[in-house]
Image 1 (cartoon, rainbow, N blue to C red):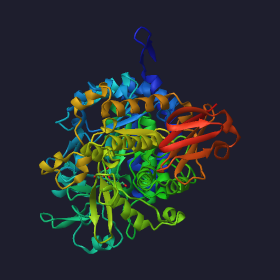
Image 2: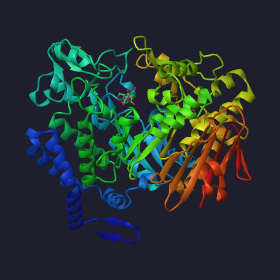
Image 3: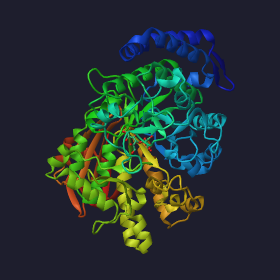
Length: 635
Ligand code: OTU
């Protein structure tokens, strides 16, 4: 390695690269071989040979700064777990027009303490309706409306220069019907036919349909689409223009790994693996979370750990907790699978508790989530670009004596604003009259009452609504994992009905909570007394407080406590080097008093208030007003 001391640039030479390759192969290749043999028994030698060549060239040719980044992260695999790793999620176009525009807004993100930027789908989608970019027509091109691959690379470099990392979506489960693989398969090219799942008649699809669920029952009923030109059915879990890939084909595996390598070489730090649970199909099941999905992900992870270890995997698996933790490698034996995964349960429970004022259901549900490997972490969030699916597990609702269907229905009515006394302004997404199930759309501000208060010009209610939003985010910024701030929440952006004017979006009300950033509104963060200034300052201080609280490193241990008052959520985070942290959050509508020793044990005596809203500690007792919370630290 040559070191240019004056620029501090490092130039890894070929012998260093070869030595690093050898060390990583020794460590990870057995996992690759095991996976390939299990998944593709008839093709293992050929596929393993091709993959070996890919990782070898990749290590030898990886851009020097990224090769150095790989070494640094190999030495510090917990880089994404640090307390100061705070995420921000946005659409490049809605936030800043283009990728180059995003690069110009990094100061804004820095004000919010952001260290991790997730840009929503940005690879070239099909024309017209494209499910918010989740129907990809080219994995090797950036959406021309946003820029080019070169722009993506410069953005990654700019982010790295500010110690920020870049996360982008990789849609693994399906491509657009217009993707070249699909076009060739449709034209009968034998090399591509096995990339997708075709059926000559309804016999097999009908057998699968007896156990499959429907993700989009209103705008894309069923899981198969008839292709009149081919006289065949094709598997389409989501929209009819999103064709499921056939991961049972070794060619799909290899092609998608090549896509991963190419994105990693642009400087992408985290790949959000969209719809991961659906990657393997098996008759008689719901075709989600099949064991092969975990073998696929573990094998891809091992390959990336050789070729581009600086790149982390984030699982997008919105499934029940028992099915979810294996994506983070939990189980016997523990595996290195995905590094990060969405904590959907926490998100659902936060909204449920806000509506009911009860925290017991949330505590029971969170306590039931099994442990995850210490090297992995949740990403915690209040809102994302998708709807909220009311995943209330029967075991959890029974634990508090509630009926799970009735509670889900209550949440649906409450957040659509139809339930009497509701403060929320949301909408129902994908109501299925056959099952009675529905999901909820709406921005965090609209769902927590800010929109209603603004419409009514009700300052008192506005204060309460802001306190609700703060409570949810204060939990997310303190809970075990990496917190994500969804664009616009820092300014209280409300639902945006603009999507209705666009025929490619109008039937999908998830667009109501994907507003465009209004930079004139954002400017008001600097005008004292405005809603924007109040919220923005709150988010900035949450970030500062979190970043300086070492015990919030995601590798620490999380314990959800059982306070005597069921309206209070309480948990501790213990880190061997940074001490203990505790949070108490009052979801109830009355002031409550909690004895700290009974809750936290003898160590409560030395507890310091790190952050508080509408809460105080005196003589070993915490007093929390409605929506009040405390962050406590103990050395
Ligand atoms: C994801 O969501 C994306 O987040 C959505 O925006 C896309 O529409 C979809 O994939 C298709 O690409 O069902 O309702 O367990 O829940 O993949 C959203 C994972 C979804 C699924 C999830 C999916």
